[in-house]
Image 1: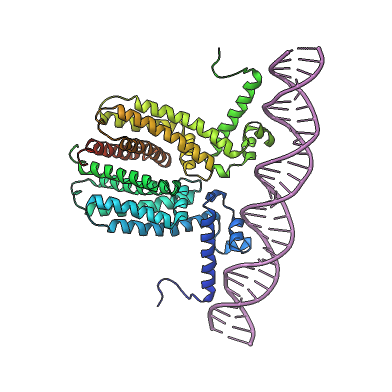
Image 2: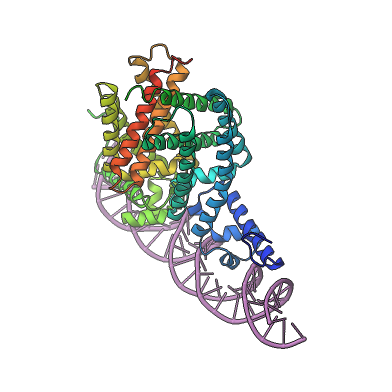
Length: 210
Length: 210
DNA sequence: GGAGTCAGTGAACAGTCGTACGCTGAGTTC
DNA sequence: GAACTCAGCGTACGACTGTTCACTGACTCC
């Protein structure tokens, strides 16, 4: 008994394989250009099908872009879950968080490059899709914060602000890992940890100075 | 006695005017697309000169992009200077800072859109130019912090980290102002102020928890 | 005032692009 | 096993791209 899928004969299987090939070829091409500059022909050429075959899977390049967002943020979601699952004092969690970001970025550089580049890119549907997904992450992060320790007396708005800062920081740090070559990773990581520490310290004394 | 300029007859004047027209027409076009998708022909068409005339001013679209960065970050530099010139307690400065950002973004939306979009865009020379300019701002900000009040015992590295956070926060806030319609401005501003407050509070207790 | 400079012109080039259309042939359904 | 579906193909089209080249004519310099 399959889950959401219907018939799924070899027919559908082959179609899905081609679709996946289109997505990953696009992702590869997007390491060197932005979505708005990506041509439908370039994608099909990379996969080895005729240009018109593209339309069997997507109506548009923006449409493919939105599909890429979903794929990409699946992997990001895994990262968030891993980070939230961390335990220990805040110093340990900060250390592990930055490690996890570095690891995920190194494992899926194309995903993160795409995310960072298109977050403020010129393709509206993709921007919207990314914003929506990051919004979900912020909520998830915020819920985790609310359940946590010392944040009992925080207002909902302040909690959300803090959650947003963590998510933003994550994306920023990912972008920095992408831009620094293999040397400088440690410097970038140290800065990222310090930023997290600063925010954490600020959080500890947030209610003192209200 | 003119400053850096040489002859500057009506000849040069007209050339400069055309160059300026190319830059501002590009900036306008770039509100709806990214630099990598901007065509040389589209730019010249918008200005009303022949496509080939473009080469009298720039060798490339990336080349024009770098020129745009300089123009754009001149205006940003004005904003930074205004922010650093603010006096008063930290709460007043936070309020004024966010006001200044909102005001500058509203006054030069195309400049900021370009900056935010191309910061992680696909045109390398432009990315590099933006990174270099933001680096300068970080240094400026860091120097101002070092001269200030309670940061006597901070290490250089920590000061730089803090300066970087302020610059990053500025860019992020600008991006958010750009994306929220005219309603929601106040909500965005409030969040931006709270983030600044959190960082400030963190800074106040930074040395306590070392 | 004559020689030289050079911002902008206009036609032509080889490519690339997205998309419309009809087709094929393997997989599906009864 | 006959009727049907549909992923992928091939051709063709018009529109648009960046860049070349020789050109003009107003300005600059001596």
